[in-house]
Image 1 (tube, helix red, strand yellow):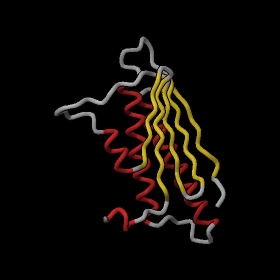
Image 2 (cartoon, one colour):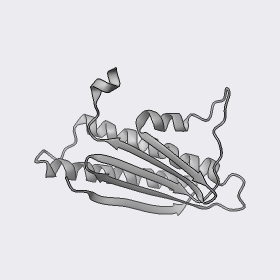
Image 3 (cartoon, rainbow, N blue to C red):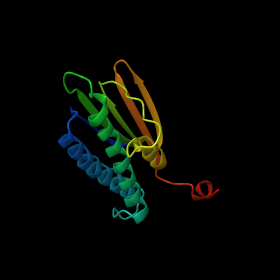
Image 4 (tube, one colour):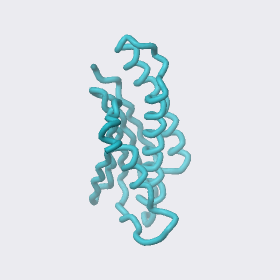
Length: 152
């Protein structure tokens, strides 16, 4: 199956941008998944499992974006940039969130915070790379979920 045109957006890492990015991703996912359905000869209306998958991806991505806003520029003199790229290739959605800030290690011990990475990992396959130039969070999720391995 061919790739759907990727989503690629960038903006200042501010709270209102998180909502804008989240809405853009949800629209893009709907369009990409509907195009996939149509290309496969199915109705473009998304079945519940694909709607749920889109919701999971938006939630995981929102958490990654919130982490950028809350942590990447905490000690910086000014707010930097964040980017969101999403694509659907060979029935795998890949979402990449980047910033040009500084990594802040997750807290340990009892706290009401610090569960974002765990949430992302429960919904997607996550890779985090961080260095002097910023942080990149890559999340992948196949469209077909192997229920037998999840139940084992």
